[in-house]
Image (tube, rainbow, N blue to C red):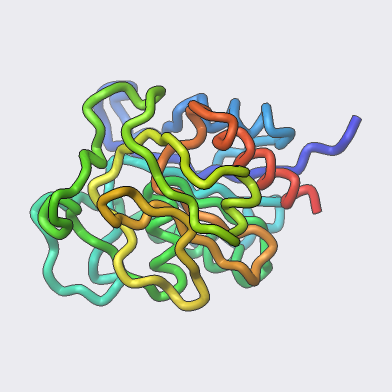
Length: 238
């Protein structure tokens, strides 16, 4: 049996309430099942920034997942904070450290939704803090329907790794974000856009695998979503 590469997935976190009377970690099961179906061995990562290097030594690839929170605007040089911004500082500290170490090691790195935004910040880029207030005639990037159905189309940029992986010039994707990439980080290129011009995907062409997408491919609503996970896991296999 072929070895399954170990894929780290960053967890989400919440304070006491709901699932537990104590603070807790969580992540939807479809993140893990998508990794398993793609041939990987998923490993959940708690938010211990000082242990990021130790965790990275265990991994063949890193997925920075999405979540209902935002990156502190101060981390990309903005003093003003939009009223809609909510933060999880411990999570962001861990994800920044882990992603920076992954880039330094050229470890395959996959950012999903907020994870794509974090990748842009890692490379020195900035973010749109609230799409409805910054993009004229913006689409409903926080779609009202279920996440296992498409919310809008994205156009894939020709010649990018994303195009090679997905094998298509346009995809129907789900959408659950109110922020997006503004100014690109150093070395990154755009690989997907929404019809309203919002950047929906980024990648670093000089690294083994470094892709971020604004949608949630773990729902696998298209063959391209599965192809993204498969390509990432194969890159982690080395």
